[in-house]
Image 1 (cartoon, rainbow, N blue to C red):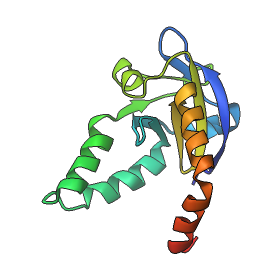
Image 2: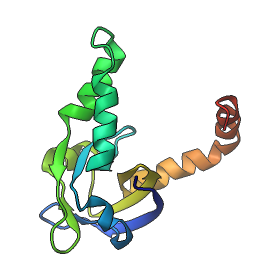
Image 3: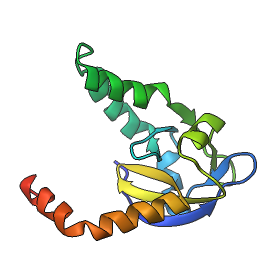
Image 4: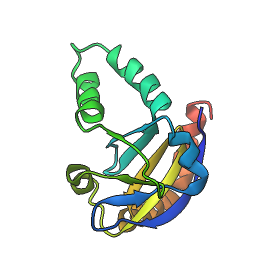
Length: 145
């Protein structure tokens, strides 16, 4: 299983191509899936991690609205992605629009996935999380972390 950590700043080119950090490229040799994420970012999964998530999502009850909505968000926006010879993936226009990706993109490792953020949105999100870190930490304690 891939483990992604860290924050990297990359430039999105005019054709929608984004470089994946070199240290992560081997994790995507068997393919990748990019989809809409939560908080207006994109999620990038190695094929194996995506398959595990997809199996869990497909087992959720379709009779309940929240599982249906989450599955629609994940599956409806998903597309296969492959690294080109320069270690880049192509992000389709509809996903770039969803995440409001401009030139500068943050590639953030989050254990089993990578999140792709517009740089300004990422900085705002980080500032908010840092400002609320005490409250967040207390909630995490309640979850056993």
